[in-house]
Amino acid sequence: MKTRGAVIRSAPGEYEVVDLDLDEPRHGEVLVKLAASGLCHSDDHIATGDIPVGVYPFCGGHEGSGVVEQVGPNTRGFEVGDHVVFSFLPGCGRCRWCAAGMQNLCDLGAGLLGGARWDDPTSFRMTLDGAPVGQMCGISTFSEYTTVATDSTVKISKDLPLDKACLAGCAVGTGWGSAVNSAQVQPGDTVIIMGIGGIGINAVQGAAHAGASNIIAVDPLPFKREKAMELGATQAVETMEEASELAKGFTNGQGADSAIVTVGVTTPEHVGQAFSSIRKAGTCVVTGLGNIADTSALPISIAELTLFQKRLQGAMFGASSPSKDIPRMLQLYTDGKLKLDELVTRTYTLDEVAQGYKDMHAGTNLRGVIVY
Image (cartoon, rainbow, N blue to C red; front, side, top):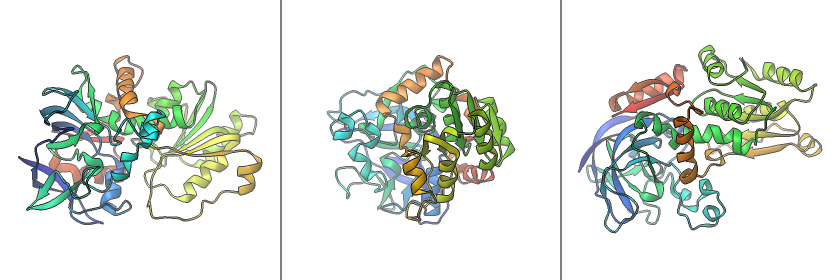
């Protein structure tokens, strides 16, 4: 069938909407009509070239929701009309990591940026003028329709609004889990969250949910600081220097219990600042991405790491397991304990995807969402 999708032809580049050919689903796959897609910074990293991909053109988008239109032959567990949220991280359910409850580290994730099927690097579901088109994380939510593996698909209640539920596929679980799972925030903690975008604002919500007494949001933009205060932050400041002094004031000079780095383009300097702000035996969680080819040394003291027993922790999808935690996030939303509506600053059409990223860079959105 034909579908319209936003692709990058080369990097650096800008998303453009083109007419694509889309294959029908095969065994273990479903064809989904998209309802909504979040505009995540990771897809902008594809456009800038900070994250290189396996093939161009490359159809972006990895945070989406929709309705199943067709089910592949002999594919169990799904039927036409099911409402689904995509997980940008597939889960095979069989590898060591899935078996250990760490689905976010599933071995299938090795193919996220290849653009092809997990089991065959020559097999694609999208083409443009006869040439293969890569699918972001195997799903490509910047498309009116997409064919995806059931490994990347989570069924949800039909009562949920799809234009909000899409956020559970990346931003919500990544930010919330960075606080609750990776930083292991405890009641009474002092937490610094560095960078209040689509991920950082959900780290604020996660820290509040976990019972932190002091949640210090750090962002240079007044709009972001204002939103952080509305969604659970207790203080909001412009710089890490201010945040570090506040944390010391709350902890008798010790420093924050944890600092979570959710800056859109994370640099070694950001990590160094966050690491310096935490107390002895504190945790610095690094969730943000920058240029993945950058191997610059982190400006942290080895003596401080060792003698102060600090922990430097990476976080992939906030150490959440998508099949379990996407429904859990949406249940928290249903119960009124997690805010999703307030995260969506502006909606766009598919043709406005490039404008959506311009707005993101301008700092005017917490989350932009494409509504189909």
